[in-house]
Length: 169
Image 1: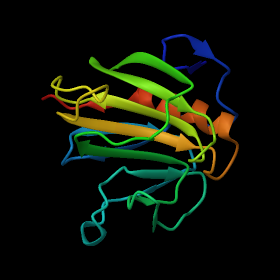
Image 2: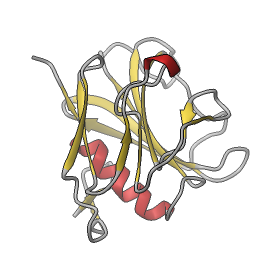
Image 3: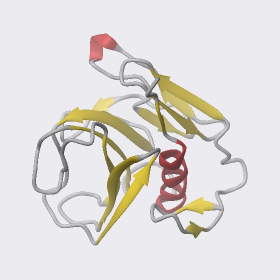
């Protein structure tokens, strides 16, 4: 069964969407699993792209998005100092725990942005993006503009976030 970000189960992942592959970012000390047959963009220092930052079911080319972040896949994972996000309020907001760390997941309706789902995980138990820009955070999300079916992309994102392993050794 899939994971809805609240610890409850949702519809199972589509056939062939099992998270059998993994990507490790040695600099940021995390591992994330992703579906069989999916592509991942590896680290590219010249373009300032971290390892394990873009995932998708087919090959893709990274391009600068509206925020200046390189994007092009179906799911995005990035680590930042401080916070970033949409300028509009979410339609849902849930507190989550991922591998012992606290965070939340917000879903946004289409509007000024394409809408989508974003997880925000506090990596150093130091700051919250809810009212404070302190601390380092991992963001993981998909948008309604990403290739493929948004509902399926969301299910896969939920499972990928649940698979996160933050290296503490």
